[in-house]
Amino acid sequence: MAFSRNNQDGLMSDINVTPFVDVMLVLLIIFMVTAPMMIQGVNVSLPETENTDNMATDEDQLIVIIDSNNKILINDYEVGIDFLRAKLIKIFENRSTKNIFLKADKNIPYGTVVRVMSEIKGAGVKKLGMVTLPLETSEAKL
Image (cartoon, rainbow, N blue to C red):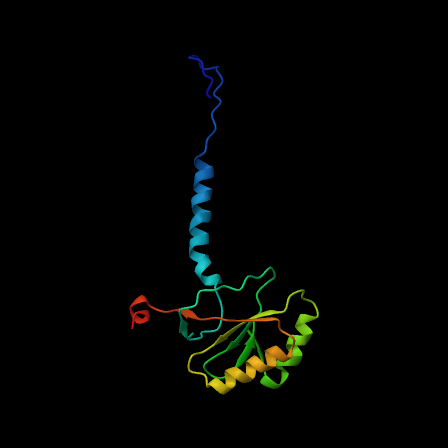
């Protein structure tokens, strides 16, 4: 609402929103540019599947990754296969749930994936979710 009189001594009471809009547009551009850079991770070529069941979680996700070079990582921290079980047991001392997601490159030998799964289950994991990509619709019909 504006109050004004015709003479020079009058009051003018307006809310100037132009600086606010300018600041908001700058912040929007900054977030649009930086958001894609915040996604980090290990480049893994995931296998594809039709199943779309999702494993719900309340805490931060714990992800075990097997990359194309047979390196095993727990949330981006490299660990050897011989120390995987001990490291997971130590991690689960501070967590209420024992859920893990496994991301394995599709070119990794089956035996390696099974051995990692065995170490995960040996650490007392209750639920093991396999991370995959959905099948393309044209391939699913074949």
